[in-house]
Image (tube, rainbow, N blue to C red; front, top):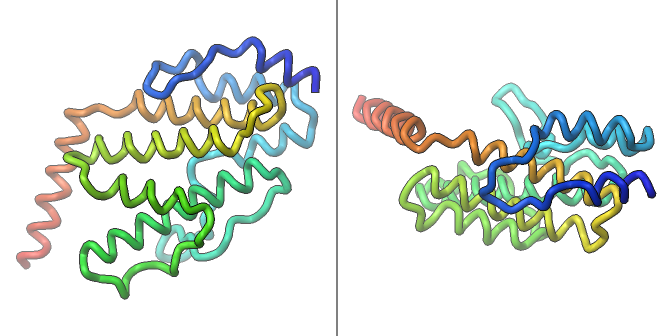
Length: 193
């Protein structure tokens, strides 16, 4: 446990929206080099995608995520899965195609449902929606990590936060809006045919 304290105590504090103080890949390599073997392997299960089951039609979140044995990672992946299912359900209802919605999202975690609805409704741009989604993710990571700032969960949470900060920095408003208009116009053209 002293290794985690030593690492965590030297890390700069992260705030959503800031420029990442280091690359997530560099942090991951550093963390893995000093973690015990079991925890180092668990680092390979940390990503924003909740480990969907791949089907011929692409990812599916119908099945619960495969458990890793780490409560933080398993809860994070289930939160993200629930979030994605709730977002898909909301889009289907909003577009009046409820039969196209995936299975009913799990009741837990409940905040994922609220975050999905908030992200999808009331936004004025896709960028604003992505920011709301990432802020919901950030909050979930903080809640799931708990109060011990010097255990393995704090290291796992730090890594995920770095990934979110990198994602946030990658947003380019002009490019994103141009892509949105392109997709929107292609959808309109397909609907008219």
